[in-house]
Amino acid sequence: MKRLLTSAAALAVLTATPALADAELYRLDASHSQIVFSWDHLGLSTTYGMFSGFEGEIMFDADDPANSSVSVSMPTTSMFTGWEQRDAHLLSDDFFAAAEGDVISFESTGIEVTGEDTAAITGNLTIGGETVEVVLETELNAAGPSPLPQMNGALVAGFDATATLSRTAFGLGAFTPFVGDEVTVNISIEAIRAADMEG
Image: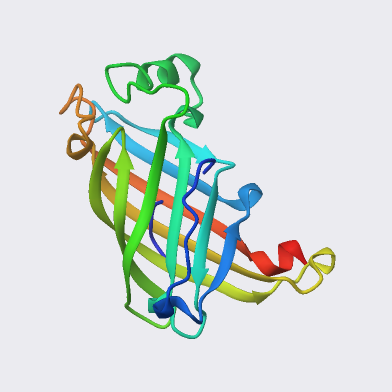
């Protein structure tokens, strides 16, 4: 599935319901999963930030992707933009007012298959206590046994996704329009079937 968000350290565990009977639990590979976000600054430049090393879970149904679901979260304070003073400002009361233990989370509520390897994932994104419904345009890059010998044939899946968010929708609209309200989010993740990780 291609173009998205959502991700994380504290993460809600999904429980398989009868509707998800054929879906299998996959866990994100934190070493190969990243979320990159960007916004406009004064019309002069584009600023980038990142979340990485987060954890998440996918109930993945390879035969019926619409029967899948995803739940991801990440510590807000793990945000990284490459400049310490900017990171501190973003986490201050001007923006996220982030405290230790605060998380950004995404919980899918539905998946619409839009092509052979693409889907629109709708879900609830929560930032700073504000929850907004967002749509992640997602592409399945590959799914099947890992080609790495050390993985012993473990089933893996890789996805890319994009989304466009409004800062003001989450109460984070400080300094608009000089700092752009629109935030572009790009996600790339790998996941491993949980049964293969534990076996």
